[in-house]
Amino acid sequence: LISDPMSKLLLWGAGVCLMLASASAFSSTAALSLRPLLRQTLSATSVAARRGRSMLFMSSEARDKLTGAKFEENDKAKNPQGRGGHSVAGSAVATELSPEAQETRKRIQEHQEKCQKLTWAEEIRTIMAQKSGFAVISTMSKKHAGFPMGSIVGFAVDEQGRPYFSFSTMSGHTQNLLQEPRCSLCVTEQNFKGAADARVTLIGTVNKVEGEEEDALRKAYMQSHQGAYWAEFKDFGVYRMDEIKDVSFVGGFARAGDITVADYMAAAPDPLMPFAEPVMNHMNDDHTDALKDYVTYLVGVEGGLDSAQMKRLDKYGFDIRVAKGTDSGIIRIPFPEPVLERKGVKEAIVALSQQVAKKKAEAAK
Image (cartoon, rainbow, N blue to C red; front, side, top):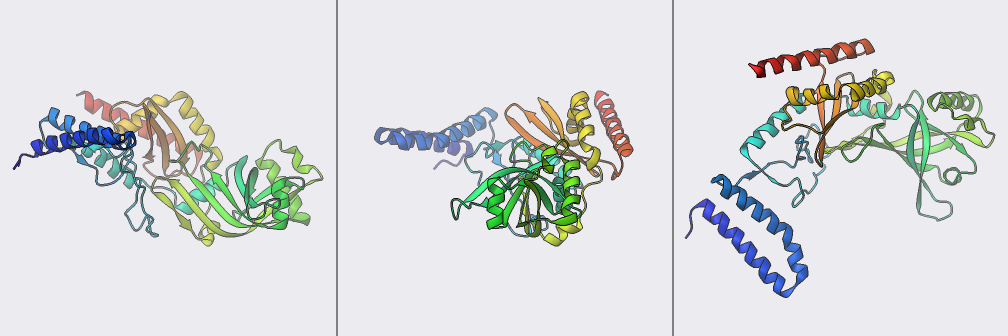
């Protein structure tokens, strides 16, 4: 019997190779199905052999390769509905990690979990309050009964967070709503790039607004959508989701769930939202090196980054979209204390830069 762990590992790898060779003799399809396993096996065995140590171990949780962001959430406080995580076995993120990489990932994880963030209700209200917002409304087709129809439409929200629209009577989605007012609205955050970014879906009923309220909402819509002169055309009316039935949220990997309609309506958008976009544009245009330094020296992401872009700014800090090669992720940088006005944002960012300078000086000693 072979008791040495390294020998066992190499023997097991050889066995898989033999199995693949046998399968290929009978079926090319079988061989193709085993190639991912073979690549994983050979990679593991060669790494173990080179290092002369026992097999590298898998991370206990599924996380992305660059930032360690979780693809599942086992904390009941953060995942009260008990939603299952993503099945990542066999994917690019299900790779072995060295003890050193595990330690780095743990350090990043601990830092990120301590970062204060907006509540889900606040984050959703901030997304919904975006200026010049466009979203996908799904209505029940009048032409094809029982089938949904998706349309990209402009929207704004009233003080309660109810979305409203300027629709032409000639539009297909308007005709659908007049027959069946039940629909859904899917809204993404302004800097949406993909699965790691936030989106919210409201389900409810949309009805036409009449009288003085229609005039007031039309003016407000045109303020949110500068240049939307067509909102004053005679065939355009104002429609609003008067009754919201459900609010669901996906804030990125392992951040998915529902909030109550009452919590949604009671929350307020982030106070920095009115000027967050120009601040982020300034940082992304003129201070990308500083953003990379925050991620490297304040969080501990190692190895150099190809890019770093600020994607969200709120009273508690900001999120940076980082990339290295084909890998990317989101890193949170917290402010020393909450910021409620524009002047405070500059002071908080300067304080972060001072922290970086201090860490650089210490590292140079």
